[in-house]
Image 1 (tube, rainbow, N blue to C red):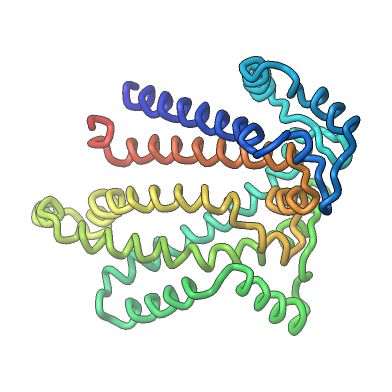
Image 2 (cartoon, rainbow, N blue to C red):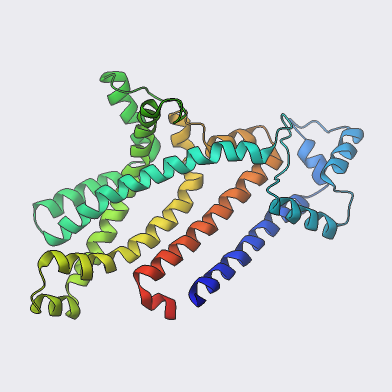
Length: 316
């Protein structure tokens, strides 16, 4: 419990720091923030529009009052309204975020399902055919960006073989089968770059733990090879894998932009690109804040899982 409380406190302080920095970005911009937000195409906004925006954003109030109001809105889940259509940013993020998270979770599940068995087999057959085969595939996967993999998948399975649509989105509850078909290729595109990371980490960790004295002791006691690998090797080898996956999950929150664009997947990354293009600064700030919050929460979850896998961590 002390370990969990300590990690939660660190996460809370980090979230407060991130929220504060995002708030200050608007006020660190040289000149009048309202004028900067309204400037477009090199044309200066009118004095009336600048004053109206200052009043709308509360920029005429003291900075401390603005900061308190900003934190209060965040705690209420209110991220403001869009400059483009005055729609609720929180509502739009809530609509798009599950799609991006689904894409990330599906690709992560694929990488674990393939990377862990491949890494284990390569470690057990060190220097053999399967070790070299999987190592070659891992090098190939690492060298291919996700959008390149996605484009190749579209050319092969959509344009040539006509097996699946090139892109799009259908809600799960509208058509579960069609939803999974649309999800398959973008998930594979991301997983191709993540599988080699999992594979190499598992292989290295398993090789390391196979040489430990307590593993040789377990074998000497007569434990079967399956139990030795499961209870004494693989469980310990998965600890660094959890850390690496956690870091990559945070990176993928902002790294699925091109994949979502290639497959026309209406997720959070596409909304961020659109907001930047339209200079919709409240939307950009809201999306960045949500991504940062999720990144911190993912790392908190990784710390908790790491502590469960390795009890020694909880005592440090």
